[in-house]
Image (cartoon, rainbow, N blue to C red; front, side):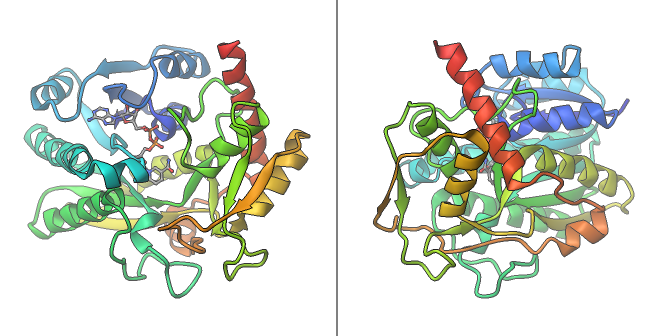
Length: 340
Ligand SMILES: NC(=O)c1ccc[n+]([C@@H]2O[C@H](COP(=O)([O-])OP(=O)(O)OC[C@H]3O[C@@H](n4cnc5c(N)ncnc54)[C@H](O)[C@@H]3O)[C@@H](O)[C@H]2O)c1
């Protein structure tokens, strides 16, 4: 079985990708420092997989710790999820974000080179597009100035990967630009664990329905969109996980020294009000929401053109918005049971 290192594998997308890798016959090995996750995620993961997934409590900035993991395992590839991701915090503490998100990639690339591991899938984001002029947005659409230090770390990391390949490095790399990951594993054993007040819509919706938050504020209803609220492309986390499996298989067919980028979205945009109405339908819960002012820095609308990933990786989103919101809600109910 091919061993794949998953950095940040106890986190939201990493844990679901570990499940997808096991289902596809790979052996995932996780490293995580649990700065934004809980060890209980590993228990949920083991339960779904029916066996213990190897994991190390290691910080990706600890070069000798990372090297130790490479000494103990013969990896055929790496998926690099480990990063900080809170946009607001990144504007208050940019150095924390630049250090963690950029240095972890550098240390990983150097370690991979030292141990002769060539293939890496990097977690990028649609944030690199800013507000695109033409929608749906394609991989060839020029990136824009980042709206936040977090977004800039994704641009910088993509640039590092491009320069690394240009230098002739014996490496094969895919950057996946995620749109808005939502949902949870249908078993509700793993899901998103927002620490503190969620900055993303879906955890806010499910926490409001669960009575943890009093109400949702919809930031602006005067945008140039069908109902005036912002539009995003919500992708189920299991579909996103599957894209990583497809990306690894794709890399294994490429020549040495290779780089490519794919959007990972559904190709459909939904407004905030559509999300709220769909959630109410699938959960049977009435949501308390109000319309507030626009939030500075919010993009009006963005959704993916998915032709490239559909045609080249043979990947397509299978889950609907209803599926995503139902799974998010079931996960929230599981979390609420734990607290009681
Ligand atoms: N969730 C999203 O909306 C979204 C969108 C686009 C891109 N991404 C990117 O996808 C990746 C995964 O996101 P997620 O939503 O699963 O986040 P997450 O916070 O749930 O998972 C990240 C994991 O990395 C770990 N981690 C962070 N720094 C580390 C370090 N130095 N060493 C070891 N472990 C470390 C955290 O403890 C956490 O378990 C990130 O790179 C993120 O920027 C996420």
